[in-house]
Length: 238
Image (cartoon, rainbow, N blue to C red; front, side, top):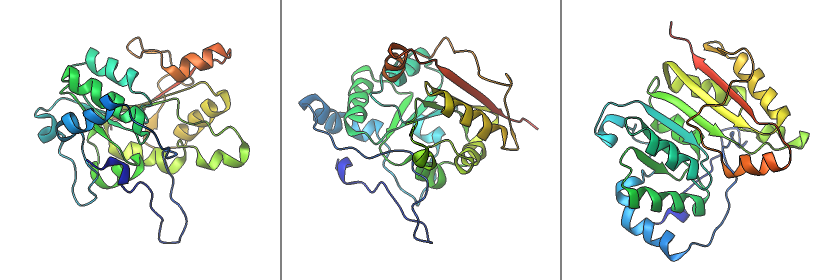
């Protein structure tokens, strides 16, 4: 499976790059990671195809709610959450090849049939392959904060992306974001507050969910004395 050669960027009609959810990075794979692609790719990896809409009921062979995780890094948190919630389905999207193959290896070895992976830009996946009102929740844990002001436009959580997420959510569905960058956390609150159809049941930052394990990025932030900011918003039901 030639995952390394997949197209991962596009240019809009006006010649400008559209918002992206990642920075593509190369990687050398260990033998077990290469083996995971051969052994488990066909069963657990969904290829990008902008000509077809995903049918979650067909993919998972059930009607359980679907959570989409955007940018899972090494995948340890994704694996643990999916293991804890066997009656919830997960679509995990990541372009970092080493992390992608590590999670694929774990999913295959444990036969986590409630988890599927995609290695592609999440924005394009949502735009072309995910139907409106079909996702129960989004997990976005420690997205790149792009701390320099001149790079803020590269941040994932912006109005256009927030509207895209809301469109894909079922009524009552949620968006759960976590960051250790205070200024980015405030931006998340402000962006989601500006989107008609979303509401923040806490009015500010949310309490941590007991089912969310500590991530590697989170541990690094805590070691630097960074405060963890959790943002939870929901799509209106009516």
